[in-house]
Every structure is written in structure tokens, then in C-alpha cells.
Image (cartoon, rainbow, N blue to C red; front, side, top):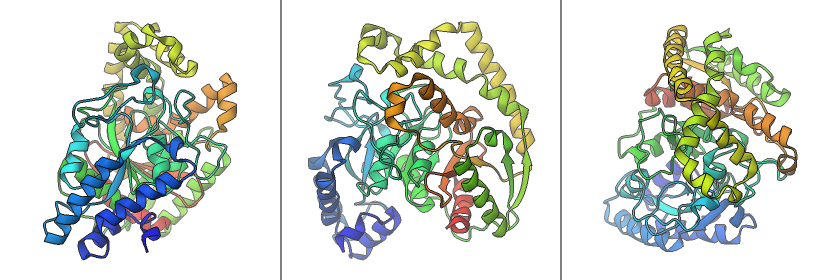
Length: 442
């Protein structure tokens, strides 16, 4: 029975613990044993916190036996991207610039999850300083995509995704600045939730672009995403009962179909057909303000990223992967005037976007317009790296630029995701919508 636990959803594991069918100690031992035995262990986990995990599991077991569980996920083991501070354990954000960095306390979201009884299995690999949607990291490790051993898994939450996809965690906690939860979720056939900027605490999270940084789960089901969001916030899970797509109005954002390659397009078109069969009403439009917002990306993202990390980068640029170094340094070309005017323009474009989409329940588009690229070629072909990285992030960045809540769902075609965007701070509505879509796409 214990082997089947590794592929179960968090919700089902939590219910098994509540019923007494699963002991958190046995469950955690099963995960730790699977991690230790897995040939990809060191390509997925930067470090495993076995001692902490067993201590937390022992406490969860005692609570379960006494009938005093702290929440529906009490005793469930999960992984954390290596930019969430964890007391006494290195947090290095995938870069040699932070090698040996050991925080003194947990990030607020890790502390919240721990207070809900969740078990920390360890820290997972990621793109260097979280500044790539591909998941390639020659400085530390590059996990493989679950569907293609020669391809990258998506980033920057690469290990977070693969820890779940390879059954080495029940959920991975990642961050999303321009797509870093949703891209690896899509490419590894998972559910990924991008939260609204400012909703979930980033205290104790190594920053990239604080204006856009968000925290969210990569998991197996929409229910798991709802349960995990509540645990990260120390709140109450969204009520997902009775969700339906009947009468739901969805807008296909045709901007996201430009340069979309054959397989992601096929996955998306098939998914749209199934959503219509389930009762959704579909309209289509190309919105010019989205293109205008995307054109501001270089100013908005690279300028703040370089301002945040310039001192550390320029002290030791030789320690960095050249592609990531170049992306950071691109932020030096813009002036303060450029940056402020770009933000002013973005606020106007957001208002126009909200007005144009107000009559719809959600906007949908392919999570990524490309399939996972070949890792070796990314390492050796600069032009290929640039093209694939920008395309990988193109659709997901819409959600960050427009400050949306976002959800990526598997379409059934490997490594092809459907992205759903709703207005800021509408996660509970988005998750209910996601349950209806999940049922239609199953």
C-alpha cells in the first residue's frame, strides 16, 4: 500500500491520515526512501531535510492519534523551491553567488505550512536566481522533464515540479514572477497556481522582481492547489463543491496563439472543445493592450532584477551562467525615467484589459506556446536559448503583467497546459472554475 501513497493527491493523503489508514511517520519514511533510491535524486533535490521531516512527521502522527490535527494537510510531506528560507538549512536560490547562505528562520509561508502540520522534505533545484522559464541550470543541476529525459522541465520552479512529477513529493512550493510556477507545471502535466501579487507573503523568499514575485503550489489536482493556498496563508480552503462550467463565459486570448507550435496548439484546441462540451460559452479576441504590455517586459523585469542583484553579480560575475548574467545586465540599459514611465503605461493597460474582459468569467490561452526544449542545445546554442526562453514565458507573462490570478491545467496531451486567468485576488473563484475545467478535461 505504501508505494501507492507516492502518487496520491494531497487531499487524499490528508483524508487517509484523518481516517487512520495512513500514519504520517510511515508516509514520510516512504517518501524519504523513494527520494534516496531515485536515480534523479540529486538533480531534483538540492538538499533533503530528513531529520526535520521525521520530527515533523512524528508530531503529526501523535496529533492524528489524539484527534487534534491542525488542518486537512497535517502530516503531508512536500518540497520547497530553494529560495524559501529554512532555518539552519542552506537556501542558495540556485546560484553560486549565495553558496553557503544559511538563514536563521523560516520564510513566513514555510512557517505557516509548518503550523498547519505539513512536513518539509527538503529544498529543490531551480533556475539561477529564478531568472528563466526554462529550468536549465549548469551552475547547480537541471532536472529532466518527466515526458522527455533530454528536455528541460520548465522554470524557474524546475525541481518543485519534478519532485511531484517523479513522485518524490506530494506537492512542490514554487514562485512565479513571469511564469515560474505555470510553465514547469504545464511541461510536467501538473496543476500550477499563480497567486495575485501581494496576496501570499514573500517574507523570507529570495527576491527576483519584488513587484511581480508571487508564491504558489505545483500539485496534482485543483483541490490540492486550494488546500495548499490555505496552508500557505494560514487560512480556510476555498469551497469547491458544486462547481460547474454550465453558462461560464470564457475568452480565448488569441495573442497567445501567435507562433504557438503544433502540439501546444493541438492540446489547447482539444481542451477548448471539451470545455464547450461541458457547457462553457467561448468567444475569441486579440487584445492590442496585451501586446503593448508585453513590449514593456524588458524594462519592467530586467531593470528591477538588476537593481536588486547588481552588487552581488558584479562582485563575482564569473560565478554565473552567462545566459542568466546577460539577462540581468540587460537591465542596465534603461533609465529611471524609462522604468517609471513603463509602470505608468502598464497601469493604464491593466485598466483597459480589465474593461475589455469584464464580461467574461476568465481568459484562457495555452500555458506555453512551445514544448520543452532540448537541454544540450540550450547549453550550446545562444540564439536557440534566447528564442525558446522568450517564447516559453510569453503567454504566462500576460498574467503577471495584468496582475491576474492564474491556473495551469493539464490538457491530456503531454507537456501541454491550458492557462486560466481571472482578476486580481479572485483565487477562490478561479479554483472553483478550475475544478469544473479539471472534470471536463479528465
